[in-house]
Image (cartoon, rainbow, N blue to C red):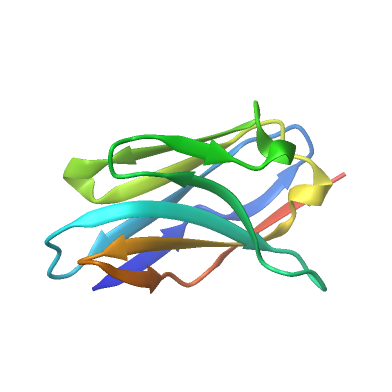
Length: 114
């Protein structure tokens, strides 16, 4: 079982990006999926999460700007990021509970220029 995060890149402040977190392999169940980020010199922090049933959560700094969603048919979770700010610059990671085990994907770099 693998998670593949993609969609990062360089964007100007105020711009948008959509990150994808795709699960592959022998999958029986996917539960909660979370997006984390780690900026240089800072600890990894939880940005947004979505439960298997669709409930969502966000840290205060991204509320109203980011939206997490899932496509169960594609085993993919998305993070739509709008009104990006330089302080959103970080490596973004996804984590999902797959077959009752926690799985991490490799990060994708998001750089927001001022």
